[in-house]
Image (cartoon, rainbow, N blue to C red):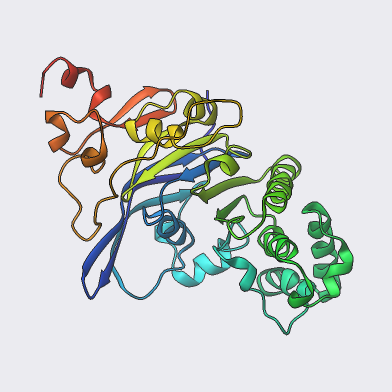
Length: 327
């Protein structure tokens, strides 16, 4: 019998109010995450990945038009917590986040070690000495010399600053860490080094991760499962091995066909067309205009089809009644 998930997300929605209208950035997203599991959320720029992360962490801008759904962390339904209780009981202590472009998030006039230790001093009331000792432990875990604790951010390279921000997220030993494009501004060797550090943390601290990225190659290093996002919705969720070798959704297949491979002569194939406008998303399947398998039922919003124990796909091609002409 499978244990209850660490995180359960049900029918999550986040819409923004702008001068041009309402943007449906996250629209009916559901998934779960087991303990000590790494879930990679893939998708093109603008599909709602970062908005989903910010909604999970409750770090939202002021122009919110609508939010909905349920988020459960362990036995705690997060929607029942006030902002103050969420900040004290969940943020950093149970769930932390490494923001996109986080290398620029460090205070330039405060030493790195002090910034990494700060969550322990603020949330747990630890002494400076005890908090700095823990910061040194986490620096070692992420592969940074403890000598850098006494440095200022401008004295660190981009890769070192990224590791420092990761250490800050890990210092309070949260159950879940959300990583939003953590390697996007780094060179290939530094990306590999950061991913190795994440794998070591996952193994040694029993930490769960949600990695948000559009980089298929980087995501494959850490992923236990993959969730593919398109136009504010999850279109496929399954084990990483299955996704990278036998994806089920047409978008998943076309995405994998667009990735260059070292040991194959087949050239990458670009995905034609453009994602839909989230100010006015089309009725029915949002990928239909770009899909080579489009047929009549795609004019209706697809149901989420279960293909295996934890394999879900949002596509009429996998609905038996549709293939038999029932719709």
